Length: 407
Image (cartoon, rainbow, N blue to C red; front, side, top):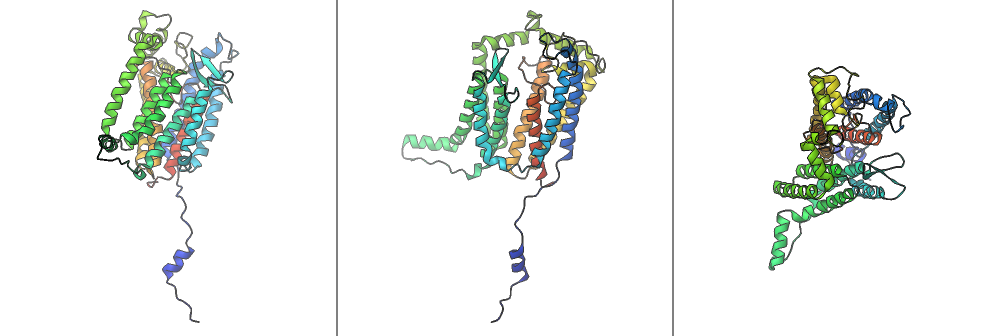
């Protein structure tokens, strides 16, 4: 029997191996900027925290001058390990886990109200005690980013709703579909549930961050601009009502407008922060030479660490650090523009928008441009769980950069 001849092309197609996912190198500028900021943050934390650690009236530190630094250094090392591992993973696997992670974050955020599990400080119950003390809202932000990004990445696959055009109700339904109302319903429901859970903690600053994340991802996902105008007006109105109806928020606004009305209590942080910034001048008083950190400025190792940066390094040093933050953020958005797929692009937009907002809001609070909100400075403020989650998010950005066609 004659043998059937096969063309070389046919034989090549049969023997070809299945295509594998392209895994290139991580984006080096983004990684180096991250490492540099974490290292600078550790140095500044050591400088800002040792007086508080030595003269701790609550005896949490045992008088160990390096208490906060050692804890943060351990978490930084763990964070680098987490960032490395996450950067090696294929980020596309998270798309199918987005809803699961979001639901887990809901449960964890509600669990803070369970006696024995939650930890209360300053009138708010925002922390879980186990396995270490951490804020589930950090996981909630990550879950929100993944869910919105995953759903918007499949936006083109959505089948538009259709109603009977012969009835008034049907025509109204078709009009709502045309303007994109029904498409936004799932996002709105998730956001309302998230903010509702945060309201019972209460955690106003996290609620604001959730809204910012959602708006950024929806905008990058192609939602019509008109919805942002309407949503901004609604959010602004809601915030106004909350502020006017809540004594806690009203007092914060009052202190923001005139911190000298209560200089020894509620206005103390803002006043001492501005004194620290003003004392720094152009070149600062020198690394380690801050005076305000000696129990004058409350929590110099946490939310107000940037005031110590300004005092010790001056305007020049603080500007250079902000420039590093800006370079990291801009590089992140560049990676989003060049991501391999829409899911990866939207994830980076969510992560970098959250990061940028935290930096801006913290600096705005320290300089009294914003009322005190409790938003920490990424990579600088003391807080192990927050640092690890931030490093994991940076690792996810690096993972997406490995599949960047430009690389």
